[in-house]
Length: 142
Image (cartoon, rainbow, N blue to C red; front, top):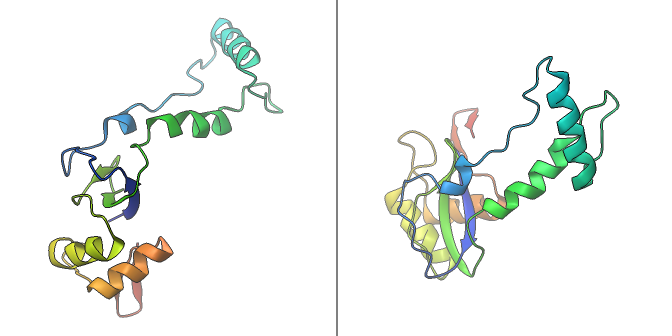
């Protein structure tokens, strides 16, 4: 179901419901299997880039990848936009000047899970808490 709030430029013009291109660019980590030559190249790359090596001898790409991937995030700005995170990630709403405007749009045009809608106030509470969810009885869908 995933939904999240992103702050983007007010003039951010990317097609709605189309995966953000930067999210297709996921770096891979170890692809060597038993290829010792590849492992040595990988360790040399890590040494050049200053990437620490784990206790089992392979570069710790996790932290490096997290920093690297931030370069592929949508540009930051003053606008408010709802993004989907169920797949790679895509804008689901137009960009709004205020969170209230976005929440009003969400209440009329989007769901929090399947066909479950939320009020403007519920959207605002969820987006403020960075926890968009649907509750049916005692079950919470996130």
